[in-house]
Image 1 (spheres, rainbow, N blue to C red):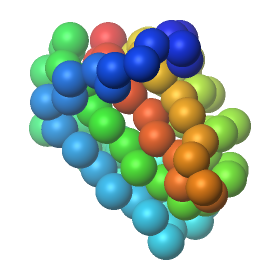
Image 2: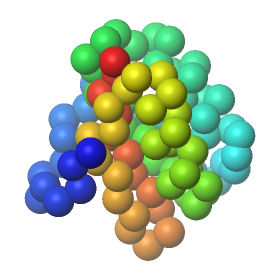
Image 3: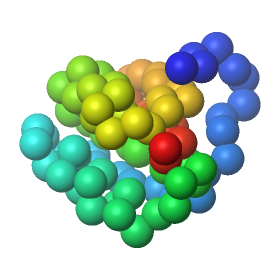
Length: 83
């Protein structure tokens, strides 16, 4: 996981789960990645602090690469390369 780069990774798709709480962000991510291909990058925006635990586990369990994870004023941003 890269967390120190100044520029954000280029993404192929975006999913905004702001305002949703566990388990909804992960359920929506499951649906979104089904429409994507290996190697594509998904940008996820979330407001639920539980995503800081759930999204890395999601990636690890399904073989995706968490490229970047950052928090900014109560908003969480993730870039995931599909495996």
